Structure formats: C-alpha cells, structure tokens
Amino acid sequence: MELYHGSLDVSTIFTQWLEEESDSNYGAYVPFVGTIRAEDGIEALSFDIYEPILNSWFEGWVKKAQAKGAKVKMAHAIGDVPVHTSSYISAVFSPKRRVALELIDEFVEDFKANAPIWKYDVKNGKRIYAEDRSTPMRGSGLLHQSQEEQ
Image 1 (cartoon, helix red, strand yellow):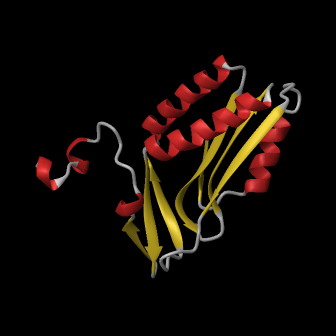
Image 2 (cartoon, rainbow, N blue to C red):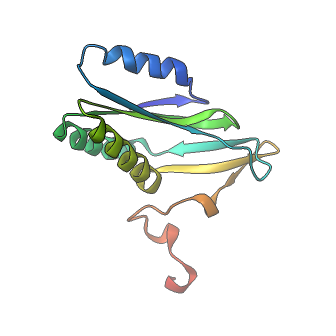
C-alpha cells in the first residue's frame, strides 16, 4: 500500500508494480483506476486518511489474496486531487484470471465501503465534507448516529 500527497501518477505507479512482479510468474494482472469526475461544480476532491486502520484493513486483504495465490496492491492520494486526475489505484496479480477478476471487484467494493478515508469537495478553494457521498464506518459510534438514535 502506498500513500501519496496529491494526484497519483498512474503510469509511473503501474510501471513500478509491473517491474516489481515481472519475475513472479503471474498469468493475470487486473488494474483499477479511480478518477475524479467534474460534477456539482467541484474543482477537486480532498482526502483525509486514518492510516493505522487503513493499514490493518489492507493487511487483511493481503492475507486473503495470498490464500488464493494472488497479490493485491493499492495507492491512494492524501489531500487535494483535481478533477480528471486519479486519487485511487489498485491491482491484483494472480496466476489465474478468474481469481484476479473476482478479487479486484471484491477489493474495490470493500475499499469503498470500509476504508477509513474521508472525502471533501473542493469548491472555490474551500473543503466541504461530502457527507451525501460518504459511507459511515462500522463502529464509528456517535459521529454517525441518526437524530432518532440520539
């Protein structure tokens, strides 16, 4: 897992990953790139990350992939990422394509639902918490209780 400040240089990161695994004898390499869309007048998205929980979450996926003979890699941006650039990339390397295809789907979906990353819209240079597009984390307690629960 790699964290970068600002937009990700997708070509450089993918090239690095391919070189790292060039002698690993994997038959399949399935990448995923997340790009910031221009919508709702945003200039960028901005990201805060709680690294200890993200590291633990990622290590769980490393073990799950290893159990299937595969390897998972991921990079994410911290801070502001302008529209039309990448904030998230991941890839699965596997001896068999079916394992890689299934794992990348599960990994990306679980990342979206459970990774401790907070997203903000950037409009007119100001960060605004993107609550309507955020997923509450399990166990986050009072921070995400509805009015009825309080």
